[in-house]
Length: 167
Image 1 (cartoon, rainbow, N blue to C red):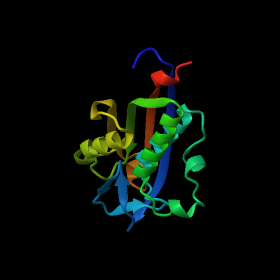
Image 2: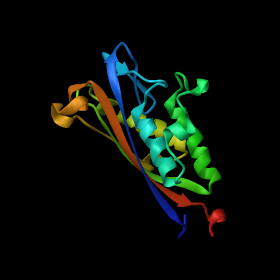
Image 3: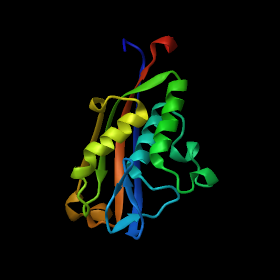
Image 4: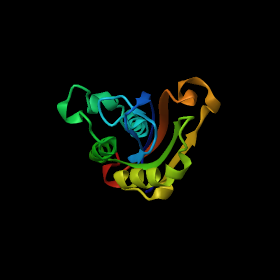
């Protein structure tokens, strides 16, 4: 991609978990006794990625682009938010060149689902899966994530300026 300008963004999200909700992470529906209590599907990983991309553009956050009071966001698929914000990133003259992320949830085994999450996110961003990292942590039973009453995710993205948008 040459020597174009780079931007870095950091995102983080946390949602409460309760019995009966759906647990969706990285676009993967995970069989679990608890799920998110949120306006959209609650996918904290996708929300953190959107926050990171918006932050790299210095253009608000998830709520700026997908407000909770927007009826179209009701029960929305958060992986679609990633795709939509990726179009915004490209329109601004950038492309996501690398993404690193992790999820914290101590009571549900996530390792069997990480490769599918990575593939889903890579597809949503138009990336090779080798450019996407998704990791999971248990928090060793500490705090709301470790105890299973909440799940959180953090993400860092590197944007690279497209050659035809160079200064």
